[in-house]
Length: 443
Image 1 (tube, rainbow, N blue to C red):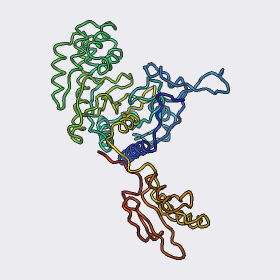
Image 2 (cartoon, helix red, strand yellow; image 1 turned 180 degrees about the horizontal axis):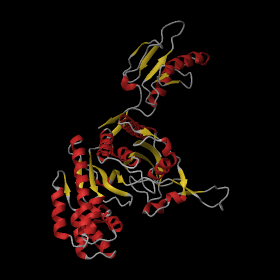
Image 3 (tube, rainbow, N blue to C red; image 1 turned 30 degrees about the vertical axis):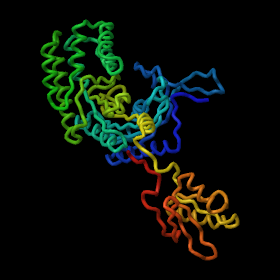
Image 4 (cartoon, one colour; image 1 turned 135 degrees about the vertical axis):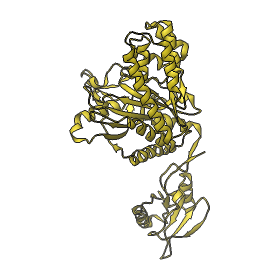
């Protein structure tokens, strides 16, 4: 019985997924991030919070005891288990701790194109002890842009904002419930300006404040001019009594945002945009926030998001910045787009033919030697005519067939694509590099 929202990949699709995962592993490793893995299950009290995602948690209990109290659930992201991990093992970690984690997560949201209930997520975080320099924000963002640029997808553009800019500005124009306003603004791409304005008003903001918030959200810049645009809007809109305090928050946020944009842009020109509509509705972000989009593919939405937080752990003391890629969404789009193809679905490079069943042990010895040298090898399942054994390899996209020499004659190997056949020594023969394993090719 099919279950919606739980992807099952064909062998060829799985090659694409493994290629993406391998590329991410390599990029993160090159930048000195340490891989960890956490358990899939966390206590429910740790998973359940105030965010909308809390409504999508899958709880677990034993089938054998349906009356048992449900106390645990599957993690819906990798941040919650990472926070628990740092809290438990902080005495063993060296800070700043550079971690990457690629695991499946489970989220009970409505399945749709590119959105699943079970999917791979790839996270990187840098967490400090007591403090963390602002330059780390740009460092982490740059690693993610490098990781995405290495994948067989269209170019991406990262949009950045700063929660201090939003916090200072919103409070300076009279917003008292900033988190609620942020959750509304976060819906702009989904429901549009008019619907967001109506929602803001329904939550108690007057028309003028709602209009000012939406004017702020319109500010976008591929250069440094966003600073003056925000300052001009601020001068024309501020009106609360303690405006100096909020202006200080705003100024700090603009400084962080400009420094981060300049640093990322110096490393990845034309790949980053300051976008004051980026809200990131989760409350724990406190500084720069990031959303990344594949250019020319608006339906896919953000493929990488995250930001700076004051403390990973409740109680403070562990500031950090992290970003997350929805890997399965990218795989799904690549599979359906035709932008990539796979050279073959099976890892096997060569099939060793069997002359007759009495000689199967000889074919097996050849296969063992080739495998020992790192060449993926199978032995033909039956000692049929050689033409049948070649057809078997061809149907499975295996490029070579090995023929053990009879009565002391030399072994031979055949490239069944070209038909070329030549003598080969099992201790020295190597396939061309492009045939060594299945490859993903871009179009």
